[in-house]
Length: 123
Image 1 (cartoon, helix red, strand yellow):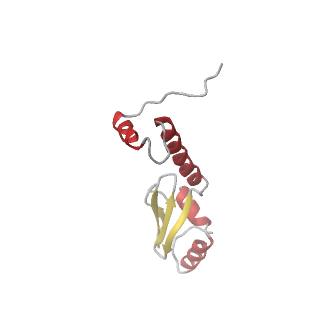
Image 2 (cartoon, one colour):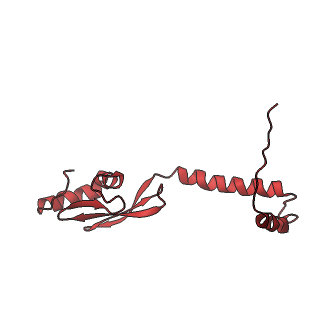
Image 3 (tube, one colour):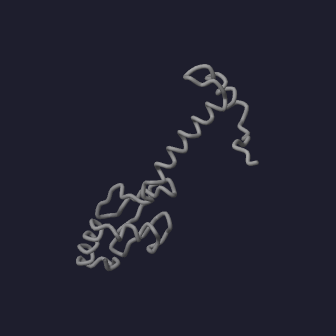
């Protein structure tokens, strides 16, 4: 026979806080409260998983700020006359640079800068 429930341990101070809420907001037990809290947290993380890993936050002629949801931070990719470089990876050939080079707006900028003599990748 398989069991439909498992036991988890949480710190007593969290249980004490939950106990203050039991009997209010429709919660009759710690289990009801925990299930609701866990469902809401799972919904939050599931929705963030459906977002793409990378997103351009902004860009100008000096570089691009890329949101990397896997890392949970903004990554700077600099565009300079001597090349393109990701400060996070300290590389000119990483997932962030590759993502930046795939963006039509950035490709247009790079073509313009290459025409001015900058040493940038061919896009």
